[in-house]
Image (cartoon, rainbow over all chains, first blue to last red; front, side, top):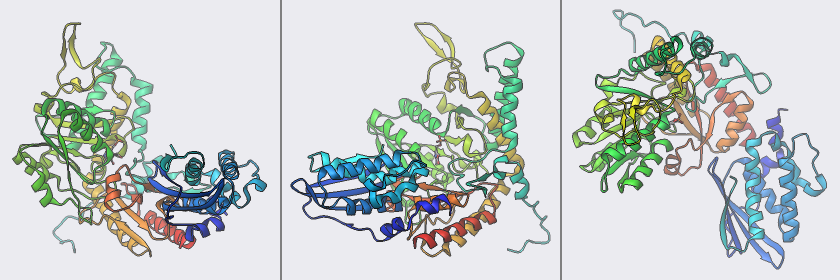
Length: 152
Length: 417
Ligand SMILES: Cc1ncc(COP(=O)(O)O)c(C=O)c1O
């Protein structure tokens, strides 16, 4: 199998076709717009908190299979987690994507997010995978009701 | 159409021989895949003769131009000026017009926006562009309008990606100082009626800049027939090197435009009190020019002229018709831009896959296309898209390469649909 076919893991294709937690959220606590100026892709992440816990997270927007499936898997991974846990997951995910494509993957920390390891071989696509996470991370830290982050 | 027996059969265009002139076309990519290069609107590949001209210049003739009495300086100057003649021939330059070398099409447009703007555009005036322009034919005019208190107006396009000419007629008025329109759209492939635009603008007293970055590589250019005041082209898109572009303009206007950059070569005399500028074209070629690139571009123009741009256009027209027909048969493909007259590029989307994913999977098959907004975001907005996939042809592409593209798209469907 070629590297590209390996990158498009079945899980990624599935989440691309049937994205989870897709759509607008009524009365969110935060909305973060993610924008990739290189390709023009845009993505909105909605967050609702219950105390320190991410009670609900949804997303919508235009994007490639990598950014869409990454957003979808992100929502399923962080829902119900504390802000600190979600932040730690973002950091682990980010660290994996920034690592060399031959470096071992921290499977315990990443769980099913490890399916994005194949993206490392295609540096221009790394930003597609991290775009939703940058939006999330910004929503976790800041207290602004609405803001925009970019990959550049 | 059946050829009349009385007509001499045209000499066939031997695309395989043409391919042999381009060394890069025989390389492989991605673990041994044959390269299928369909990203010509971004940049074209270079024939061996252009590569050789550049290498010959550096190994035999390198010196600065217009500056020395020594042998090599004279030789470099001659080669540089010879390239200007070659470009003039390629463009069918009109008497009273001048060709200026710039660092690219973008710089040529900026030069005009700057110089023409300072010389001719005032508060309350209007600059008219179109909805299908490349960012490089939008942003310089926006900057000019902002600086001079002028207004930027935009000719709309219809769903097929053609200029709405009635709207152009309506927008053109006594305040219009400049009409800046692309000859061929890099994002849609539309060929615009530039001669008609130039004629109408002239009647209204406006000047015209035609962005020829995407036309010069694909069709014969005849400045007499077009009648533009300014015309720009990009060397690297027409088989020439990067780092060089062409500005063709009416001398009478160029003479009245203030220089754009100051420096060596653009002056007659300099004192601290007053500098007297050189005549055109030197006045707009400040500093050491891209000498090797200009010489390489001259060689490219010669190469294209020898092939015959009418034959190149006919060959590429066949690819356009064949490619459009084949693409339409792939389920889920929508062609963006269905103008009656198209050249160079076909933009499309697929219902099952984002352009980036299309581009990525095609790349895995060795097929190089572009996915994105093509530096024409207003076009994308017009169609409610963030991006398209774009296959763009050059004079060395073949029907077999289009078949490879189509086979790749079927694989995209297998994976994503
Ligand atoms: C229509 C058009 N105009 C202008 C340009 C700018 O050319 P360059 O980037 O070589 O200056 C391009 C190149 O992409 C183009 O397609």
